[in-house]
Image (cartoon, rainbow, N blue to C red; front, side, top):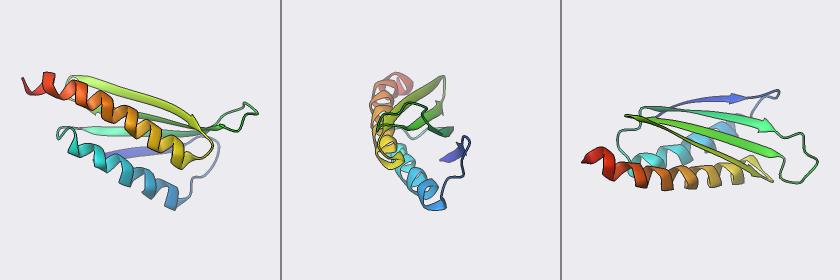
Amino acid sequence: MKLHMSSVKFDADIKLLNFIQKKADKLDLFHGRIIDGEVFLRLSKDKEKKDKVVEMKLNVPGKTLFAKQNAVSFEAATDEAVEALRRQLRKVKPKASA
């Protein structure tokens, strides 16, 4: 799956970008017709420990799926966002294949 990644007001490490791509590629197992996606990495202005924000948007035929997660690390936020998108893909797939 083609994934466009952007980090807002900082430069993301290539290892982080590869981690996100690897996790997102697993979503193809749940829905074979994912067109593309976008990922935005941000640092929250909150002084909380969960200041890393990952926003993921996937385009599938007829729909756009979105997940936004906050966590202590970008890796944890990515895991949570991918899981949220996986649940959305499972709901969309039966309707798309009918």
